[in-house]
Image: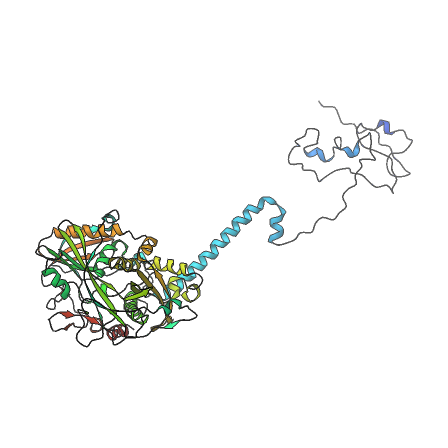
Length: 566
């Protein structure tokens, strides 16, 4: 049994507070270590219990009190040292407690451990804002599209450039991945013949700026010829003279050499006649037009009658390119003539400024290639003549490219060109390949924009930039050896085929080329693949005196094609 608890005698002081000064119970009889001192009512009170101490965790220092009794324990408190009480005595802090400040700033500043949580919340808030902005852009983008379900360009279904007939026999399919490591070096070509006439370049257009823009003119009286290989009388003559075994044009060669960069479908007709090989294009082929935004990640409207559809922009780009190549010339009648006149222009016709260079390359010991290459202008500086190729990039709506040419061309022309290299990689590579095939000294790239984004008839020239073809090829990562390696492999493959007619078709949805064997009368006038709408039918070619089809496409034809799709 534990003994009972005895309180002891408690003295009573009738004269005031505290123990009496002289009584039966004196300070000597009080419990030990209990702070006690006589004082009057005017004296300031010290601490009896310190409730500000943290009683949840024991003190690290064993001398300091810990636990629930520590609020009453002042043995380790210097303020109640028996040796020097007055020097270390501290009063109770009588400052009012801080008033709570409601708001996010006060809440996060109360405890430093909450700062990382605040940063996380800010990141989450930014992510939510970005998601809202992305959803808003998607809504605006889907409003302009006829098919809302196709959210990404990769899901878009491209049509083949030619309808594959049931009687066609597929012989082989070549993935583009096999083209990347091909390499072949050809010696310098030789010029067999130069035809046509060139006008001099007007160097005042090099000073064109968005603030000093030039209106794009229309040249309705000048004829532009898009003649295929076998319809060229000069190539026929060279073939009869056995000058080469492979014949093509620079447009066809550049399409094959830059095939790995292509996205849209295209087709090239191959004819094996004896030991000779002819690469042709169909009448009204897509090769006569210029692709726009072919390699862009943002899709174009799929409706063909939309002015920003792929077909409408191709027609518009061809129309701009032809007019630009004639406007930047000095039209004073002074021309540079060559061995023969334009082989496709009739007597009295005004042909566009163009020179055809029939050049021959050696592919093998007994294999030569002859191609018709084009240059559009000539420039003479310090009595040194330079050949130029003239091409124009066109801006149709800045919301598709994300770069406004009128604001960026003067200060950030490199950013504009980088955007075009991303969106039109195949077209720029083909232009560069054509300039290299023609051994042009310079390339002139024009920047042409619509007067208004919804007006596809009126355009202005904002700037003209000059590049050397080899330097520009290095800039866009176009390897000349790889170009000729691709061409050499395709020629070697086609030379193994039997005599007949074949067609190379770029698969519309896969990066590969297929080879089909087609009937001998395919793509002829008596061969009907599928009736086309009247507005899409190609104008019939005109017969010249020698029975050669001179396919002259004028700007009137281009304007009719543009009007037909608007």
